[in-house]
Length: 265
Ligand SMILES: [Zn+2]
Image (cartoon, rainbow, N blue to C red; front, side):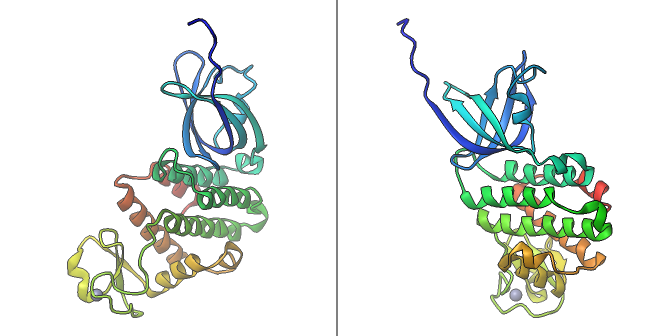
């Protein structure tokens, strides 16, 4: 009875999504790991300033982590920062954008359902943000950051299996023509004006916006960032992407308002 059982441990690279204070000096940490998908674990003593692990368990950090299996909750037993994305943490715009994508990953993914594509998309997006020339580029920098967010949303939806149908009407299956069409969350894609009655809550979408979404779907970010998108279209893309994401999520994305305020969209 008294023999100490050997703890079962496991390890993985992971990106810290969020933390929550627990009683005493502990923290609850949500992590998107490369090997196991999303994990929630307890970090004992992580609230203490003297904690060796605390800095490695802050949101917007990629760390190499070791866990011990617990009865209800696993425990983080070791954490070492691999990338702390320090440039993001210096600029409010980038921080707000990073928290927004971390919230999306946290809300849309399930525990213990690993997906390499999502891990890499998250990691690459944070790396791009970290080297964003915001101050030098002026408004072009912010504009690129908005493109990066829209690009992230589209790829993220695709990898989750929620990619909207953009070529044909989701109802009549006719090829979408360059006119005023609608995006329907309920029907999972574009619907033509004739079929609008099938979902009166669907949102109008311009031919240009459909073009950009299709382009993002197929291209790399290197190509996507070369696009020059005018303000009006930028706004439309944000609005329809968020409408679609929130429809699937069945709730509001909490960090979107702060992000809009900071980026002045
Ligand atoms: Zn139709």
